Figure 1 (cartoon, helix red, strand yellow):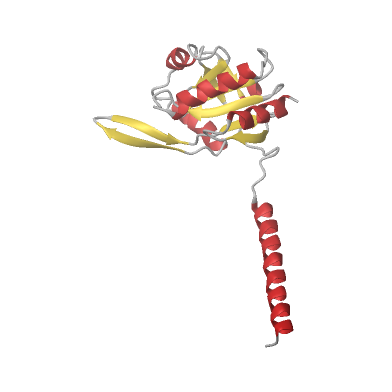
Figure 2 (figure 1 turned 90 degrees about the vertical axis):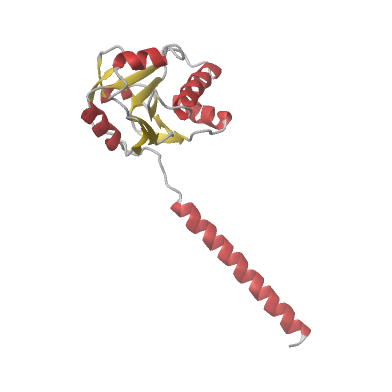
Length: 196
């Protein structure tokens, strides 16, 4: 093979590799799931941590943050409650500008009073949601939330569960997600976006 043919062959390989890279990127971008305006959730009738009835209407009329957890959670839930409150304080979000909800996927232990005692010392704006277990779990299923009871022995248990926060627009539709442990600036940017 002459030197010219070798160079042309190498150039052809480089062009093919570049084309494959571009094609792979396009495929990966096309596979990135879009959560903008995704419809999740179904009508529900549960109670908040004051024992008052709460329905899906709570997620309408203003943006909301929606998290599913449980009060016996050793790390993810207390961290997330702290983060939600801190982000809203940092953004100077006024009371009533955004809803913030903590739905217990452990309604057998998380009574309204238990949720109230858990949430109020940490935040005066995050509302706990619980109720009859089957109704709570139906609601969680409608949001396609994962949770799984894991026995610890002697009748005790913990729960593995979905740990991201749903960011809802004023129509109650999911427009973004905040992952557990997400960079605070990124999380606050998502909240600022939905506040407009």
